[in-house]
Amino acid sequence: MKNKKEIGLDFIIDKLTNSIENVVTGDSFATEISVITKADIKLITKTNGWVFNWRDEVKVPTREVFKLTIVNNSSIIQGLICLEVKFDHVYMHLVESAPFNKGKAKVYAGVLGNLVAFACKFAFQRGFEGNVSFISKTKLIDHYIQTIGAIHIGRQRMLIETQSALKLINKYFPGS
Image (cartoon, one colour):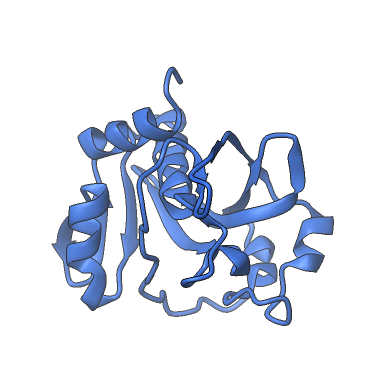
């Protein structure tokens, strides 16, 4: 597979919640994150409203794609994240909310915050003290600094370091 140019991520952290939160009722729902399956990938298509080609991400051997679901409802994917373990940190290639969790009519808030917190937890599990990097769209650099405590480390590169990672993990995964 050809090496594609890395794209800047343009996800918006709508709200930092304790799990994911129903936008209408305010009810919180416990979530779980697991590796995406072959059956899942068949449903995650541009035709079904997903922006990215997740099938391509799954094919790259150095990358892992994870899905966010509500506990006891693993058939409905709330969002996806693609991570790669580098030599000293975890790199976030893509992150996306499900089509029904985008825009003004979204069903759940907190999906992307939850997935980014998972990336930080994953980085701790791999021995990288929670360090996660990604490339940002230029216009969102300040957004990531303010919402998730990322540091701008040059050009469009962002880094979530240990302290900010711990804040996110403690918010979404208390007691872990």
